[in-house]
Image 1 (cartoon, rainbow over the protein chains, first blue to last red):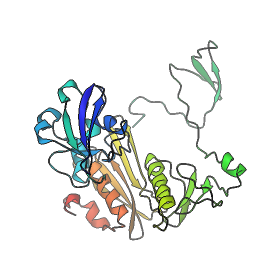
Image 2 (cartoon, chains in turn yellow, blue; image 1 turned 90 degrees about the vertical axis):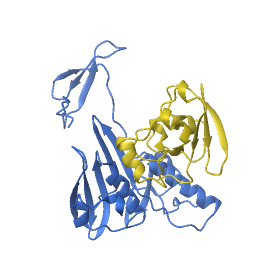
Image 3 (cartoon, rainbow over the protein chains, first blue to last red; image 1 turned 180 degrees about the vertical axis):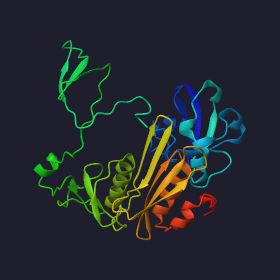
Image 4 (cartoon, rainbow over the protein chains, first blue to last red; image 1 turned 135 degrees about the vertical axis):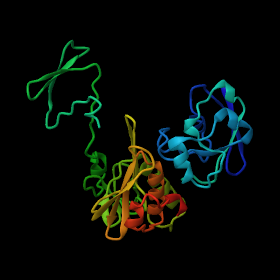
Length: 106
Length: 209
């Protein structure tokens, strides 16, 4: 299991153990983290699993590209650190990953 | 697209019977007499809403359970949400079979139960499908459109069709064009009326809106 720290929009920190191979989105949804909707279930089609990656982790998660970047351009308050977290697979490299959830989804 | 990818489509044909070993059928007999073998059979069932329970409860139904903009059925103690509900949408009564509606309509009803007096449910329907390398995203419903314009996409194979009813933009089909889909969804939410001529012009950047 890999520990992921989700910071909800009101500042509440939720440290959750997520199985490797799952997406960071699935870790949030299956543990009741507030603010991640994930309407499309992880197909990179809805932009409702938008979150900001802590800058120190960007090297490991990488930046949004292709369709994901196109979707994010029109998401609610996108930033350079924005990702759709259904597109990030949980690996042991991400132990302690910290992400912030915006107060609204697209 | 499916044909190009080697799929054989047969329309107007039904399955007569499944054949092969009892526990593990391996081919079907078609009504035309042909036989088709398979490893896996996938059934598509459920085109009509099953409102039997609602009818038995005495609720008004017409191809789905009739509700108003707050999910209220003809019985003041019963609300209905999701695929089975027939709800008011831009002057029509429609059903919406989508994940988005199942979530949003239920939330809207829950809000109204806890805190009555809010506005009527006004969904922006949307749908998606990933088929082969094609990402299809649809915002809105093109019911009753009077005009369609096409916007070229920014990469090969990408484009979007925008549907208008009079001056009003009512829907967008985006093929490998997530930017157009996102913009259309946002515009539909605020009832913005983009100009068809501008939409057709690829030099006009949606993001600059």
